[in-house]
Each structure stands twice: as structure tokens, then as C-alpha cells.
Length: 309
Image (cartoon, rainbow, N blue to C red; front, top):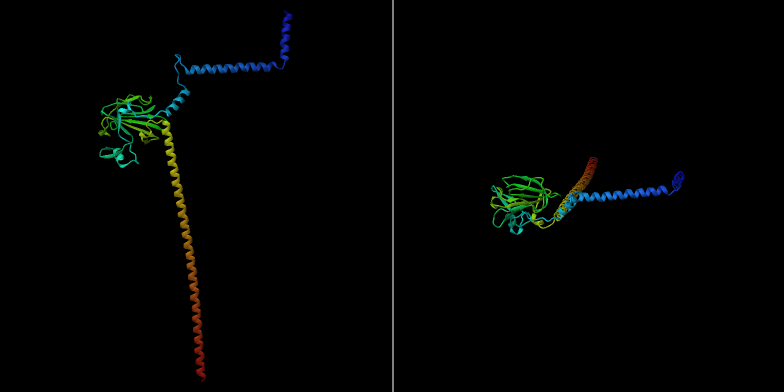
């Protein structure tokens, strides 16, 4: 036994003396550690993605995917059956012809108001279900007798949809809604009594009402790109206006400076002319004086000559 122990100890001692032993052990341990980390991440993701019944659970990756998908969701009218809906009053467009502008005016208390959205009803003039035009978060639900109750939905990136003249509201502030989800029913409002049973639908970007018909059946991303291009064009136009104004101011300054220089030159020329005129006057005066002196001398000489005679 003692000899076997000695042999084992001797073998271990000989192995420790070999230079490749410790690097080899380090590599083996590192490989085991890396394998464990990879296995843990793989099993952890599986657990995060699936619940106890195998259903998929929401996570950060899913939220990002939902936001990306929402940007490609198309804008629709807030009705279940678009074919049965009628836009009887459109958005007031300042660039439209006079007839279309007149048709987009709402009369309330003997005053005309520009329609900032679309007024929609069905052919029968009866109530119908109002649905979300896009997926988003309900930002506000207000009971308003004048507008006939209001629902606002936030779709991100400054885009909001606005629904008024709604009854039997089925959502509350903070609710997450999907496109096509019922919000309530079409009703009436004091603001537009002539419209009868209808829903008033608006699309706003950064608080500014835009024409919903322009972006119907188009993805939200297209709306955002168009709005970005419009804002850039407006900014460039404003900068060009400022540059032109600055250029005109500079030209006016140069013109005034040139006028002042010309005035000074004219004044100097006038002074020179006056000085020359003064010199001529003095010269003429001297000549006149000389002539007068000559005449006086001639008279004196003539008097002396007479006296001698």
C-alpha cells in the first residue's frame, strides 16, 4: 500500500512539473464556464418567451415589434363597414375651390366654423358602431354635451385620432385598443345638429388637424414621412424668407450709404462752386477798385494840368 501511495504521489509530482498542465486546466475550466453561460441564456429565453401553458409572453422585444408593426398599420375610417359609410362633410382645405370650402363649413349659433375632420354617417341615418381607426392608447374620454362626447387615442410619434358625437362609450382613458376595436356608437351633437346621427373623426399630428382622406388606406409611416417633408419645406421657406429679408435690408443700407455719399459729394461740390464764385467776386471787386483808382489818378493829373495853365 505504501509503495502504491508513493508511486501515486510521485506521478502527481511529475505532472505538476510539466509546464503544459496549468494552461490545459485553465482552458478546460473556461470551456465549461462558457458552455454553462450559453446553456443558461438559451433556457432563460425559452422561459421568457413562453408561459406555463406554452403561450407567448410579452417582453421588450415584443414591445418593439408591436411599435414597428403599428407604424405600418393602415389608417381606416372609424367604421366596421366602410362601404356602408358616407362622408357627407369633408375637411376644410384652404387650397380647395370655393364650393368645397363652403361645403366644409359648420354653422353654429349663426357663425361659420371650418370643419377640422370628417363627418360620417350611414345611408339610413341611424346609429352605427364606431371603431378605432388605428391601434393605440386611449388618451382621453370626455362627456361633452356640445360635441356629443369625445374619445382621443394616442398612436405615438405625435399622431392622435379624435372621435366625437359618440354615445355608449366602451373604453376608458389608459386602455390599449386595437384597430377595429369598438369604441362606442354614433350619436348627435349640439355643435352640428344639422348632421343628425353621425361621428366626427379627426387626425392630428403634433396638435395640428390634417385631412384624414389624404392618408386613408395608407400606413402610419407614410403619414409621418409626408408630415416630416412638409415641415422641412416650411422651415426651408422660412429660412429663405429670412435670407431675402436680410438681403433687402443690406441693399437698403447700401443704398442709403450711397445716397449719403452722393449728398456729401454734392455738398462738397456746391462748397467748391461757392468758393470759386466768391473768388471771382473778389477778383472783380479788385479790378473795379483798380479801375476806380486809375480814374481818380487821371482826374488829379488833369486838375494839376489845368492849374499850371
